[in-house]
Length: 457
Image (cartoon, one colour):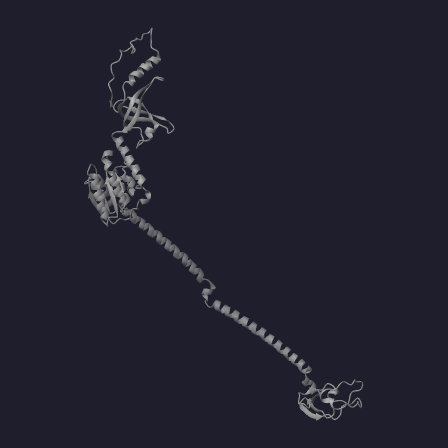
């Protein structure tokens, strides 16, 4: 559809604006034709044109981009030229098949004789406009972090109770209940029926989610709806519903439409299911499969236990087969024999050492006795001491100069001592008279009378 300004009446066909006719003899040159066509086209002015995008030629480095706009009812198209910056600033990028309304001015390029629509505005209409708005909302919510994977919660393995938000008597409700009970007959599902399209859908779904969030027995919530058009699924892309789900602590499963349908609820939910049936399979475990898994695990555990017992039994048999286990006292007895043998060797070595040392002591004692004064006395020798008159200690007589006639002598023999007095003192021949001290200083010493004059025997 296009709204245009009606062109004013122009010159008759075959005539120039100035009235000069064209003929075989006076044809118009190409430049004249292009200029005249350009003038006619530019008189249309600015207008709005509706159509469907069939081709977009755009590169970031290009200053201008080119679009092919096709009529929505007939096989007719027009080339559109617009600044690249215009397309890059759109909330949602243009794609083939988008329905748009453009505002621009028809332009004819006389240099190459081509027609194009110079556009300064492009707007999505119908589904295209709706998807563009959803894309813009998606970007805004993603920038806030509502779709962050780190915020998503894991589903419980076996929920105590499942909350189901869906349309009353809908195929989605039947699919979820049927599949869930087939997989786990004892499953507990709390169903809250709401509108799933239309103006009242969002408030009802939000209220149902809040009610299930406040129920402590509900471990997971499924929001389910069957397939439909983009307009039918629009409530599940509304900002109020998206923010409610993002605030919930209970995990939420989105099961809206079919696999190609992607409402914004899929991005914020903790788990996206392709269909309501898939949601039931993802939330409710299969009791038969779990029972079979338990049987397999029990068999594996029993096998592992039997293998462990057999291994430990072999180890125990190996230990029991050792000699020390046949006679537990063998090690003690062996060590005791070693200790006893070491003790005997030590005693033997000590006895030998003692005997050797005792023999040596006897030998040394005999040597000491042989060289000692007692043995000398026993052989008939005597020790003569002079007793000074001043009562000082007695002195051993080693020379005649120490004794004078009348000196008191003490003669020690092997079995005692004899007290005597010196009658005379005789020096041995050839000796030199030494100065006398002590007891012998008072009397003179007679010269020797012969070789037999001596003290003692």
